[in-house]
Each structure stands twice: as structure tokens, then as C-alpha cells.
Image (cartoon, rainbow, N blue to C red; front, top):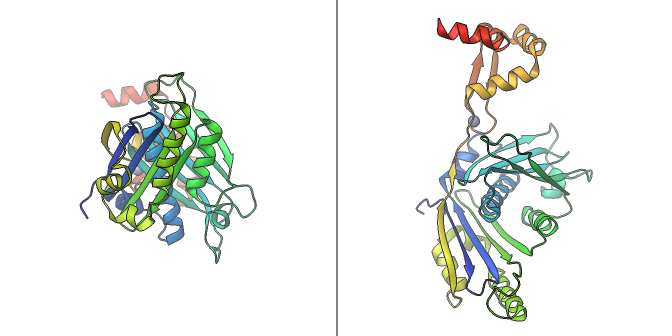
Length: 305
Ligand SMILES: [Zn+2]
């Protein structure tokens, strides 16, 4: 299986639907390297990563999209970030409780009904004046795909369907979305459009999990849509990028405050921080830590000497 990390998007020629497909290979390997090894947890992480890539390609938002599953079961939090260039990073945080016998989305995240799914749209870093947008929905469904579908219907009010598959070495998914009616700009009557969308949905519903993982995107899309004219085909590449660095860890330590940092130093001698996404270690000894809280002007002078 050749790595592809490839996302394809196009419209049906009659503009009744948008189709996005993605396959994620070595990016998925990288993502798993520093996360829990439990199979049901990895499946959920994989599905959320696939969904994040599909949604990013669909929303055309110029910052980054964060998808978060939060709960009070064995999983505390799954976070996936996807930027406009389709670079991804992801992490899982666990609660200190035993895994349930029947591990699924409800038992792992929502045993008490307090679980939440949120979508956060972060503006680009070079536009800090813009406020992030956050949409939250309860975890009423049984799969990541259903949670996302519920969210998309509530927030965008567009019929959206997702098929997500997690394999050991590959993630794969397809998103199908009904296009909004645009006042006669589309080809054909709205009845024809509806029929065309329903036909595309019926085709996608034949997708099997094994097939999503094992077949190439080209083979899959050809099997589904070989009779359907399509337009605007784009092929994009999905990548892994964490983006953590020492300065950001320093900012995080500053936000804890001098007292908290001092108490960690007293206890442990140095501050060791490991990035939850990529596993990169960052170490701050007593000298580094004291520099964190020096007034800026002093720090600048120090650097100039
Ligand atoms: Zn990192």
C-alpha cells in the first residue's frame, strides 16, 4: 500500500452535492506514536482525525479547526487540530478509570450524559483580533460520524453524511454534502437535484469499511461515480505538523505563574514538559525558569550582551 495522504474534492456536475474523500497513511502512523494503544480509543482518534480533514476541506476556513470530544468516562478528551493547509495534529487524554467491557463512544466518553462534542474555529495567528468561534453539541449519537453529522445539520443546516474507517495503517473517509439551492443558478429543477443527491447518497451507502481502507481513492470514487459527471476536482495533500516549540511551552509556564513554577522546581528540581501531541520533550532548569519571569526589558538586555 503506497502512502498517499491524499484528499480529493469535487462537485457533481448538476451542483446537487459535494463529495470529499480522504486517505491518511503515514500521518496516521505519526499520530499514533504518542497516544494510548487501546484499539477502541485509537479507532475514535482515527475517526476524529479523518473527520477533521474532511471538515477542513469543506469549510474553507482560513485559520485552524479544532474538533474535541470531551467526557467523563475512560476518555477525558480527544483533540484534533487541522489547519487550512490540511496539516493535522491530535492527542488523547485519559481519565484514571478502568476501560468499560463494551468500549464504544457512549461508554468511553459519555457514561454520565455530560459528554460534549465541540468545534472550534481559531482565526489565523496573524489575525489575533478575530474571535474564535465555538459550537458545542451533546454526545447523543453512537459514532463519531453520527456526532459530526448532527453537528453539521445543526450548524450549517446542510444535509451532510460521513463514512469513516480506521485501519492499523490507514484512515479513510468520505463526506457527502447536499449543496444549498442558489436561486436557479444550479442546473436542473430542485426535484432533479434532490433525486441526484439521493442517488449519490445511496451509492455512498454501499461503501464498506474494508473497502475504504484497502482500495485507493481513485478506485473507490470510480466505482461510485463512474456514471456521474463531476466538476472542479481538486487533489490536496494531508500532512502532520505539531507546531509546538520552546516559546509556546514558556508561555504556558508563565500562565501558571511564578509561584506554581517555583513549587514544581522545589519538588522536582527542573520542569520537564512533554508535548502531548508529538512527544517532544522540553526541559526548564532553575536558570531557564527564572528567566521566564524577568521583565521583558531585562531579558532583551541580557540577550544583547
Ligand atoms: Zn509537539
